[in-house]
Image 1: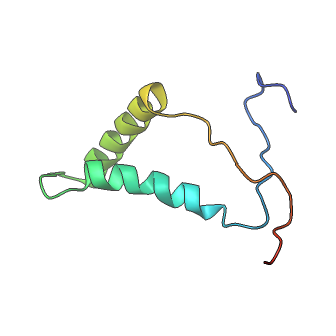
Image 2: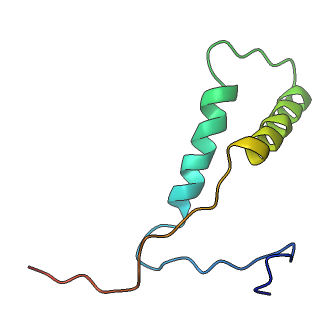
Length: 78
């Protein structure tokens, strides 16, 4: 399963922080871009189509892998 060619890849998240933080940050992007004061969506289907288009655009041009900085070392109290 470590082969990058697999469709599904496992990611072991650090135990010391919330794995939801990167997800919350990502959802903030389409909310700001799609649901602003100038947005006008006629139906749920129109919103779904627009969201799918945004995700395709984001994956094509803006997405980059998330790099965890934590190296597994315990912090020392000073």
